[in-house]
Length: 182
Image (cartoon, rainbow, N blue to C red; front, side, top):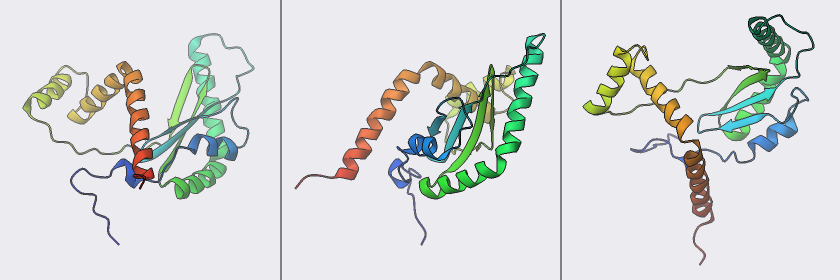
């Protein structure tokens, strides 16, 4: 059976709900992290990032500290690969989304197996000129990079507003699922 998503593409209601994903991962994961992992969900991906136990050695400078943190994250990634793959497979079946992983240690955060999802958009000339200016100024390598940069910038400066908007959208989804009372 082929699904037609229509003019607006895949909609929020078309993906399985993942409101309990953080709790599911909290219950499913072994004790890899010092606390609860940060679980971020969108339509295509679930990102799970946990904090690893602090290093026990002292390092002469920040560069050596960062190298040790990066090395410890790489070791954790290798040691947990098979188990993470199995957990991701279960979560992908449950939530209909790919699972990406990351780890934080001290001042170092590394994400791995994350998706880079193409987003189709139509931009008029004024918007394209903004992207071209960012490319010409060396802020971005391409229009795609410029658009990604702009989206990150908006996200950084509008996080509270975006959180309120996401909460409101969740209420709309709940009402839509509930339907009218007859």
